[in-house]
Every structure is written in structure tokens, then in C-alpha cells.
Amino acid sequence: MVLGHESAGIVVDVGSAVSSLRKGSRVALEPGVPCRRCTACKGGKYNLCEHMIFAATPPYDGTLARFYRLPADLCYELPEHVSLEEGAVVEPLSVAVHIVRQSGLRPGDTVVVFGAGPVGLLCLAVARAFGAAKTVTVDINDERCRFAESFAATGAFRPAKDESAEQGAARLVAESDVGAGFDVAIDASGAAVCIQTAIHALRRGGSYVQGGMGRPEIEFPITAMCTKELHMHGSFRYGTGDYKLAVEMIASGKIEVKRLITGRFPFRDAEEAFRQTKAAKGIKILIEGPEDEP
Image (cartoon, rainbow, N blue to C red; front, top):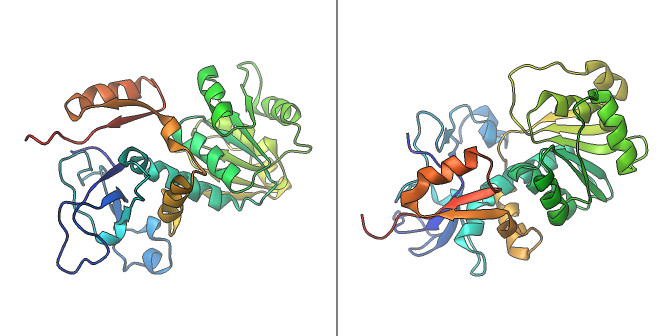
């Protein structure tokens, strides 16, 4: 199966009915094609389409190829000053936009994001762009914590191995100086201990969003969730308007996705790019398109 779903490219041909794009257009690719007819699609939740054809999701091939075909409305033209490299990062940024929108974040809110990988970092950036007063990153990797603080985090917290989720949450809240707890907690790690800590670190009536995928089932602090009357949300990919807003955020300079790009590989060295990604080297590694020669 062909891999790849975070991509940008240049239009080489269009169908006879297409008027929104032309040959030579530089576009970010939205890699999921919904059916447009099911209840989810008609209800404005096309990311939940039961019949979604999503790139690099079995049995569908991905975008790591010379050519890829998409409906015109899933190709977002990039402004002249936005590079194809930045266009390739629109997909994870749109995921972060969707996660933060799910939280109902309001200007002045305090936000904690667990996991300082690409999506976690972008959640911090989106939260800042949406007006968050504090954006705290939580990760065990010192290098990623330092990068997060230079990128979009106002503070960083490193969990200790010998403390419980409740103890870690109490220390996180105290060190972050957020009173009775955070307004919004986002988990972009999928780790059970992060999820548990996040629930305990929220104030009463706070909002929690699960963005990271982890084990299918975990131990969950349900009593804390109920007694705090928390607002709990799942988040899956991106929804209506998220891709468009992601492009606008990059184009306006509100979010500098170029800073996340830490490696570039020619197409012929794609396997090495995957090896480095698996080894957690760098943050976002890009693979250039195939050379002109077949």
C-alpha cells in the first residue's frame, strides 16, 4: 500500500467541469474524500463519514506518489508566499484546529497540552492564536519541552516517574499558577497516565479533548470527571472549515509551521525518512516529490 496523507503539490490537469483550479496551481491536499450523502456528511460532520476514502488507510493508497487525484474542492490553493513545504503541514495543523475548536476555548483561558509531538505543538500554537492566556506543554522529553517553549508554550512541565496521576496533576497546577486548575486540557499523547493527569488538572466545569490515540481501553478517573462536571470531547481528524482556517493561519503568519520542519529527504530516500521518524529524530520530516525523470 502506498503511504502518505500530509501533502501538497502542483496541479497538472483538471477535469472539464473544474473552474476553481488551473494547471500550475499550488495546493494543499485534503486527503479524505467523504461520500457526501450519509447522515454525518449531511449533518456537517463529514470527518465522521461512514464511507470515507482516506489516503493511506487500508485499502486506499496514499499520496506518496508522482500523481494523486482529488475532487477540486479538496484542493486548497496556496498564496504565493506560502511554500509547498508549509502546504504539506496544513493537514496536521487542521487536526490541531479541530481539537482546539472541540474544546470551546475562549480568549483568556488557560490550556495544558499533553504530548509535545507535531500535533501537540500545533495545538499549543492554535490555542495561542485563539487567545489563550497560558499554554503549558507536558512531555518527558526535555528537548521537545524546550522547543515547545520557544514555539508556542508559555511553560513546560516534566512528569516524575514516582508520582501518581493525582500527585502529578497537583504539582502541574501549582507550578503553572492556574488557581484551582486549567480551563482546557488536551491530550495529544494517547498515554493513559497523561489522560488521567489531565482530568485531575482541570478546574471544575473545565473542558477536556482527547486528540491522541492510545490503547483501546484504559483506567479512567470517572469520579473526578463527574464531580467536576467536565465537558469531555473526542476529536477525529478535522471538520468543516478547519482546512481553510489552517491555510489562513499559515498565510497570515499567525502560526510558523516552517519551524516544525526539521528534515528533508529526496523521494528516493523515503525509507530513511520513515526510519528517522520512527526513531523520533526531529519533529516533522518531509519527503520531496519524485524527480522529473521516471
